[in-house]
Image 1 (cartoon, one colour):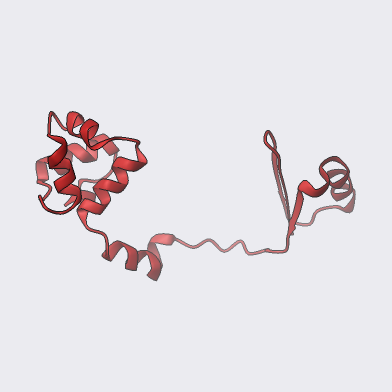
Image 2: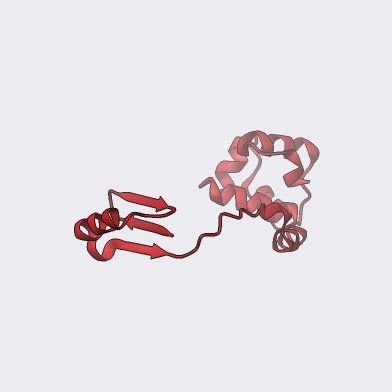
Length: 122
């Protein structure tokens, strides 16, 4: 069993056989904030080994990866162009839309910026 309490400042997660006394204290203190889950599954799945991941990955082009990493890092196309050494915003846009291919040199710069493998962009 698992007990979870989430408030703006507190998060408590207790797994395993939870003593009745502890549940009483949690319920008295947090009331409806206490949630119980019967999910005892400790099986972890490597998402990179799932059919879902393979399917999604096969459908993503280097431009899709570029856009995803840029947006996740809160960068505009113009700012990314600056970080790439003065590449015009339109070139970044064209790389994201697969109108312009991403060179190995640019892929290496992107890998440095986003701290990932250059293979994400080629």
